[in-house]
Each structure stands twice: as C-alpha cells, then as structure tokens.
Image 1 (tube, one colour):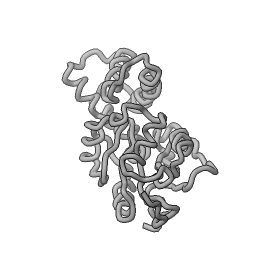
Image 2 (tube, helix red, strand yellow):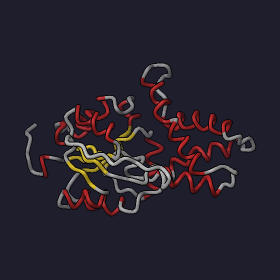
Image 3 (cartoon, rainbow, N blue to C red):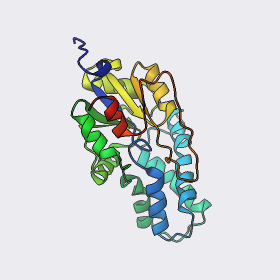
Image 4 (cartoon, rainbow, N blue to C red):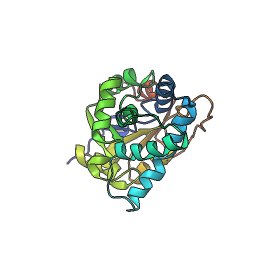
Amino acid sequence: MIKKENDVNGIKVLAFDVFGTVVDWHGSIAREVGAMQLRVDGDRFALAWRAGYVPAMQKVMSGELAWTRLDDLHRIILDKLLAEFKIKHLTETQKHDLNRIWHRLDAWTDTVQGLQRLKTAYTICTLSNGNLGLLTNLSKHAELPWDCILSAEIFRKYKPAPETYLGVAKVFDVYPDQVMLVAAHQSDLDAAHQCGLKTAYIERPLEYGPTQKKEIITHPDNTFHARDIMHLADLLGC
C-alpha cells in the first residue's frame, strides 16, 4: 500500500460519532416522550436515559456482561427508568416501541447537507457504539447519506477500545492517520488521537438540551474545530 497525500492532511476517510454529533438524541427523545403523555418531564427522562449509557457499556467492557448490543443495553436502562419514574401502565409492545426511539432520532439541521458536501471528497462512515440495525434504521429515518455504516457490533468492542478506531483503517485499507474521527465528545477524540487518527471536534452546545450548558472544548491535539458539520465542510474545502 502506497500512502498518497492527495487530500487535506492526507485524510481519506471521515468516521463520525453519531449520538450527539450527527443526531439530536436529547431533543428527539424529549419531544417523543412528551407526545406520549407519560406525565413525566421529557427533558429529565432523556437525560436520565443517556446517563445510563456509559455505565451499561462499562459492564460489557469489564466482562461483567457478555457482548450486548446497544439496543439491549438501552432496554435494560429503560426498564430501570420506568420503575424510577413510576411508569407502570405500558404494555410490552409499548416498551419495545419506546426503546426503539433511538432508531428514529432526528438529525441536526446542518447534518445532511454537511455530509453531502463532505461525501464529494471523502469516504464518510459511522463509527458508533450503536448496533447495525439501530444505525441502519436511524440513517434511513434521518436520511443520512453514508458510504458505509460501521458499528462497535462489527468489532465486538465499544469505543473507546482501540480496536474500534483502528478497525476503520483496516476496513478501508488505509493508515490510521488517513482516518479522521468527527465527534462532539473530546474523550472520544482523545482515544482516537492516541490510536493515530486525526480528529475533528464539533461543538453541539445543545446536545443535552437548552437547560444543560455543555462545555465547548478547544483542544490542541484536534486537527480541526468546527461549529457544526457545514463548518467542517468549509474547513475541508468541500
């Protein structure tokens, strides 16, 4: 394999974190929970559900749980939330449909056009802890124009395991520094940087909703810092 510097900084593949970076998980969940008339605060419910995300994955990464798809982790968290919020009237079918809310999250307003612009010059793919079925349904719902969907499910490791970031380079037969992770979470970018990937930080100040002020990180290790995906396309000349 001959390395060719024919793109900005040699980048060939843009791998995107999805939840929070590409889609608005908080707003989407809060709106749908509110529309269900469950007599709970949709904002609080969305934040509580997301708060269970990392601890649930850590149980898999530590070996306490065998490999478990994110859909199933989301359901474990949901069952606990229903008890905490004293929601007792849902049928099993309704619980299953509520859990699949993660399959129908809405994209941020800049996402689709930004991805379409980036797609003209780069291979664009997901690198998400979401499972393949979830990411496929989500992408169809939000009309996300990926060239490829890559998931932790493929590598059977959740980010920030090195196998996920380096796995992107292996899939596309490129060097790690020819892949750039695009994410709204500095911890994700730090882990990718440690594996030799380039990184682009996307701000997303409203990721946790209008009531939760999110700290915007400016980190010297990041290759790019962008307000949103359209701005990233500007920075990359697309």
